[in-house]
Length: 102
Length: 121
Length: 321
Image (tube, rainbow over all chains, first blue to last red):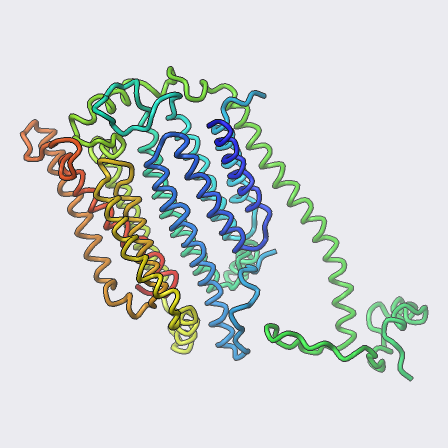
């Protein structure tokens, strides 16, 4: 089990570093979800099945879902303000989740 | 540099990177993700403290209630509470971010501080 | 006579003019911009307003200076982030070298408290899952605090997300913006959701009810049930979901579940502290209705968590419950 633990932990660390360097917020949310999933398998290897189920349901499920919902809401606010200002409403294929940040 | 405390070292790296994201990155959503990663690192550390080599998960099998047959259940209970509280904190922070975005139309914390200062002063 | 603008910019005459006038080139206003017709931008970008040419030059010069400073600060920023991260990780890594060995039996964390929980856990609480027996019986006060934190978080998010602006035009725009993501008549999603949602709900109920016999419990089961309801909302829209889950439902379920938890644990504390006999027995371990109050507490916690998760998602998506 040692090699499996090392592989999973290195996947977690790789996801963590990927989140730190990505600029696209949607990518960051998806990679965060993958990290949660890998962590949930690590809990099984550490003999805590309660933690595994809870991390899979709550961490990889609800936490990431709230991030997606918040990102969606921010774009909904964007579209509402644009419709208000009178410019043309953009289709759904806009530059999704390039949050206005440097 | 020995490699025997592998989960603890991974937990420390998770904590460090998450804390740096929380502290230094200027995007609000990245800060929230960093906060969540810091929490995950702490849970990994706690759960690694409870693991005892060669013993099984703390679910009683065949009526064996010997203390030498199961791992330490106390850190698992603490982490269970922690995971749910972490989700609650993330939800409140995301709600605050959405309100800030509605008001200032940006996710960059430096610009928000500048705009807020211009409004006040 | 038309000259290409780039040739003019590079010529010595134009450079001299620029140096003399420190800014505007008076010849600019007479130049004809001889480039191809600009390619039409895609629909997603609004049309750029045409600026005066001399203003463009001014902006270009200023932004070049800002760009250099910006690049320097950006490198400094990345470097400082890497240094801080390396510092934190280094200090903590050095500390982990001195820890007792990973998975060792003589760890100071394995003292008599976990030994008591493991040995006497099943006969005192009746729960086969020692962790569930611990968090819902020995340390039930912490779980009450945790459910309280979830409730307070849900109330905070409700307060924050339900603020609407006073201007009715703004409000209409907000509703239009939220309504963009309502599902249409997406038959694939609806058919699959009709198959999956009942299965996931039953699975969530199974996890909650078997919390004291196998891994799981109120929190994970509640999260799974909440996820099923979220799938239903995403597939069928908020009109149909609003038929069974309104703000009143959320309020009633949360209050009843939390009050039941608090009252039943208060009874346990009271009888335990005053050495009175209590009507709750541990039962036979292994049956579903055993382990005293633990199944009922699991159901209460599961309902609170389910309603909270669904309410949080609905608030982010619709702005209202």
